[in-house]
Length: 439
Image (cartoon, rainbow, N blue to C red; front, side, top):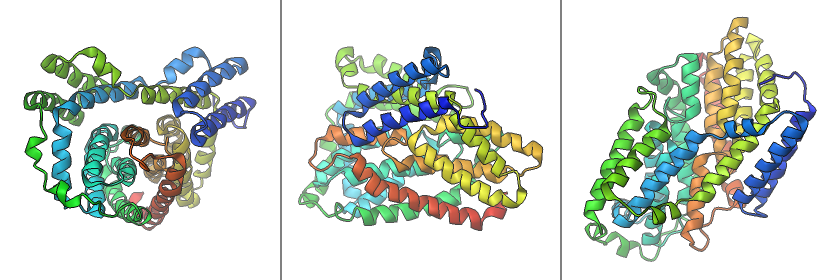
């Protein structure tokens, strides 16, 4: 990818196409999938006309690993739905919370955060999002605040560990940071941010966190009667257990997460032998196509050289050791802003060689790695499409068809964006206070 020192016409054209597509997506003039397809086709067309993007490059930009991971986990969840397993878990969690909406939000947030520290947060929300809607129905609650909290806190939880988010793995590999070192540096910061964000969400959603009329009746339900297919549930849970186990160790065997997901799908298909037509018919194809279009859009921006230009500017700002703290904080905020509107993986891929190259100029790059990890991890919470988990939870809110439960762009920007700013402000203070420790 060419590295430019000045803003070029190609960058301007790619930026305009991206902005136009995002206006269509955020304004909800049309469905986000339709907007993404139109934007992707336009980006390829203008990229070919101006010579910075090709059809082949667009195909390469599509992250097949992410798409197949989504598809594989969707298939497993689709197979699990009719067994009654989700209903069983929903009743158990409803009883654990005693029907208290605020306690329920804290419990669900804690569960998705902890699980996202060791598993992919996409897998986590794919399991928890439909479960949350069931719990909300049982307790006569609006699932909107819970779905938003799960999306945001799965992203925050994933930022704490080396394996919680793909950019962390890339940064750890480039900087030779092991799992324990990563957690000891990021864990305390993310822990404080988690508490602040949960508290903030409890405040901003206080109007929706009032006990439902069926609170006592739901808690009195017998969860053992919820399971309608014990044999099928046992077989599918065995397949899911294999997937979860492999997610813990797949790095050691150089297995893609998507391949791990389809190992589980293959086992499930062999064990329960479902009819393929209903199975494939229930997949969220609009979500998969939306991400494909988004990957093509971001690939065009990357091919234009804009990400490299931004990365180079940030790198030059860090060349003065006296300004290292300021440069790290700027990197954190710029990374967060870009991760809110584009996929954080291409930006991380762009920044890694730039940051690594500063070491040859005598710059202590260690704090820059932490700043980059925090920025790309927290920034995805800023917009409805800033992270995969966000889109999954939004799609589940639409599928639920509960009045007032649909997560719109306006709702996310009004309640989710301020929470993101709070998390970044807290990260800025903590990063400054512990800057010596982070070097």
